[in-house]
Image (cartoon, rainbow, N blue to C red; front, side, top):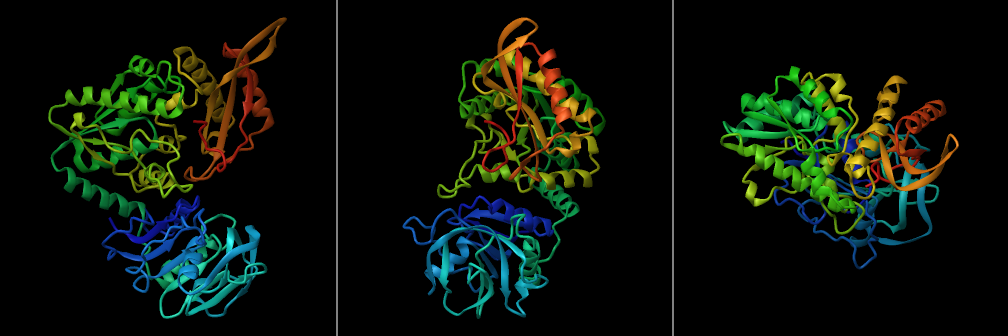
Length: 510
């Protein structure tokens, strides 16, 4: 796999956004924790240092050895990275008199600086730091300022090292993508060759070499990730791919049958396994979200172990793991990019299973997976499906899981999702679903008082799930949906709509 750009993560909530913006430039990049710099950096052409929740003045400040990178590769140090060079290399960082957070505008840009090609004074940038650079590092030249931040950007002479105190990766930095392109393409001279077609060719070739004539078993979910993974593997190994679609009893209403029908025309060897009772039994009495995920993951592995034994000489288990799954499951020194939740398809398999893992999508973001799928001719209907969590409705039922709660949520979810389709809203939403709350509320139906369940509806817009805004659905739609749910779904008497964005909330409630 081509590498090109190395992103060192110091724990910033925005690190994945840096990677997203770099990928949008058709440049491949990888994120690694600041304390796990690869021994061999010969394949990288540039390095970006992320921001961090830490202060460079603190005793717990991340302090990696950058000697094998600095002066050898172009470096763009963002926020904490910029302050890091100043604090440890001849400059001075102090607490800002006022917290520098939010929108600002570049008031001064030094002429002739390649980093700011095509960027005009007054360009809006996003600040997010409580420290500020009072004195630049040794041999540095100031190249940009804002009204409140004198040293908003600098360049270290004699090397291709740049520091900026703002975040070019966020939407609010209007010319942020241009700045990243200037650094990567004009300064570091990185080739813009990261395309879906290139990924397919490289991955199919690598899979052929890695797997050879071995047999692979893959768990299909009906979602985008596992489907694209299946087609990639099918291109590489053909009939040696055995797909299994497990009904864990936590799917959407009618999904088990509809997904099997969908795969019939894709040329894949798919077997449907109904293990609903097994999963529900494994979840009995469990309320803690992490324990639910673990129970589902364990049951998933057990089912696959059973099915894999029915396939003679199977050697590999394929998974649709994508890059956010991998990153969110790796802690960076306790910072915000520390583990948010465990993923049942990250972290390997128990020894008893005796299968090796292959994850063809593990370096892709969700939107990249869709583009790869389109490149391979997968139907728009499948690629346009909303993301659905691996643990299914178990993490949309807050508290313990019962068959009755699953029934209620399946009915509510079906009304909501079908309504989005009927109102031509489905494709305007990145992800939608219903959540069954562990509370009951008083209601009145006819002349009778009721005390029944509350459900929350959730619809967000996003690119890859790293950040998300709630969707302003029409009041008329919400009104009709609420009425339909309460009238048709026995056990529900109140519907609410979640208007939280990510961050600070997450898309799922558990």
